[in-house]
Length: 353
Image 1 (tube, rainbow, N blue to C red):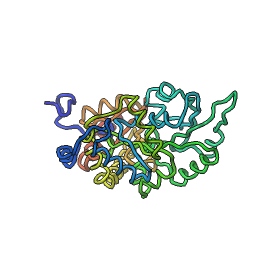
Image 2: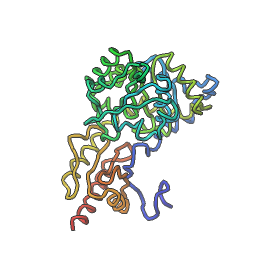
Image 3: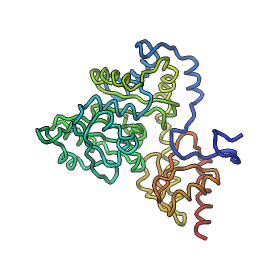
Image 4: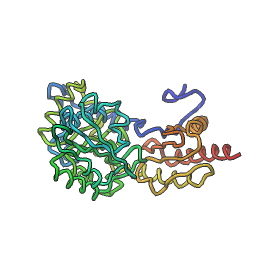
């Protein structure tokens, strides 16, 4: 029988496609079994309430709402901060634009302005130049959306002082800051600060439980009390109201209490893989740019490399024609990381012949 539905012929894969592929821990299964349940749509789900209170405490916000996915959390936030026709500023490769199927335009009807960046953090002065005042001719800028850590920039972390500069800029113009913090706990661990140090610089923050934090499903959107009440309306409107959601929220509580510090292990393995791969023929890696759990590997033909690696029991995603993305997570230990390096070495040697 193939493991996890993967192709026949492999006993076990080293799965580096994403940190979303992790399996729940025993503690999570135990928590699901013992969870006290209600009906979250009716407002009496005690385990969801515990998760939301914990998330609010961790981020330093007044309130939080549990949602099925990071995409839903981000788009709810955008809908709450804006009216149709408002302008929103994004980094040009932001997940909210690149991977959320045009949702800002479809759901919120906003105008999206983008800026380039080196490491996922546009220059605050350049962001400020793009802020528009509403007039008869121009849409007013209502939100700047940030991403930390940044997926398409290889897990890059926005420095804390840059976050603070965005905050000062937003306050000067009376606009909101939303953080797509899908992997913000990775960012916080990399910076060596509690996640609330990042969260306090923004008006709303959405983070995923189902990536490196190992929960099977779910994200949490956090903000002030009035914002979260509005977010609950949008969650219902988008079909995100869940009933006995405590089964999932129980995993999220384990994630936030047991899995955060462990993220440093993923970062360590990512750096070790980056160093090893950068020494192989036909491969280059920006080793200094590996700050969290994502490694971007530069090769000549990424789809072909991906196929060759799969034949050797390693799964990864072509991120472009010449870039492979590797994502470390709790289900990849040191032995599996070594197997991945060995598989790359085999493909590199074959390619060099």
